[in-house]
Length: 393
Image 1 (cartoon, helix red, strand yellow):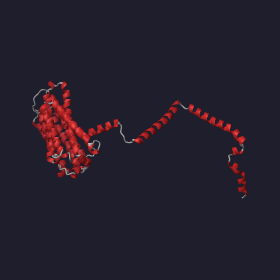
Image 2 (cartoon, rainbow, N blue to C red; image 1 turned 90 degrees about the vertical axis):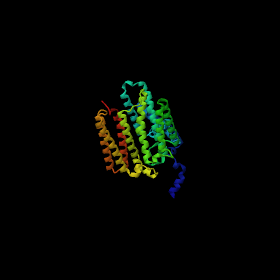
Image 3 (cartoon, rainbow, N blue to C red; image 1 turned 60 degrees about the vertical axis):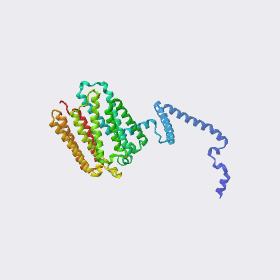
Image 4 (cartoon, one colour; image 1 turned 120 degrees about the vertical axis):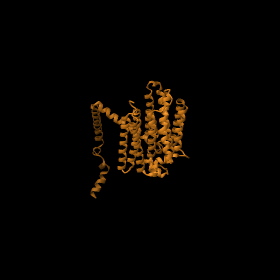
């Protein structure tokens, strides 16, 4: 109680700092000294900053500026976090358009048309005129337009199936809208017909339009002939086997001012690729069997099973290669034994190896894709061999 009374007696003065308890005069006298000490510390800090290297001061300023810019960008991004720039939209469209064209079919079209044109030029080297190069380039462009239309229209009508079988395709993945896909298909078809009609005459234009017609009825209801396994392989064999090889060779000779005449190598490649395209037609659905079954699409793979179709396709191709080797042995005056004979023997061995590897993998999805990719690789190699089939003859 006595201590409590003493504290109450002390009053507010007990809670004041020691300097203030010293009285007003002492506090006023201490203030200038405190301000002087603060000023001295500020001067020392400024001297330390000035003694830093110039590069270090610049680095600190850049870091502060970078933080400010980052904060500003973050604030802007928070307002519109997912809006792509114009450049990003262009890049995204370019990538989607490339996938829309199905690059593996483009490679086959370019290789095929180039090889067949090369045959026509090698037969008539004296007629080669570099002024015809732009016309040849337009011919390839027309073929690519037709190729793009056919594979594009198929993606439009297969969008639900592709969502299961090929979700990476741009229409199924939502990278291209249905409207954009339709616009691209119509532009490709119109552009191809215009190029052909203006540069290659009525016969080639008619064949070109016939190819577009076959590609249309393959995918578009009510016919949608891809639902019939036999009709589907007949269309693919006709377009890839006959129309491409005959049409390009005819156009190349016409550009050189020559009438059409069958060449042994062209006769061979037309027959060979027609059978090869048949194999592509029956094996192309191997990776898609799950989606085709789900949507009631009848293919050879859904009817006969993956293993049987793989062995059937490989058997037909091996028979094709044996026929090529036999032709080289039977007609040495027409074909080079090494390119025609040995070249096809090597391709046959590669195909047999891929088939054995597929069987050893128990027909897993990845193994099926690798096998189908190997068939296309052999297809490319065939056209790479074509200009040399009669080399030195």
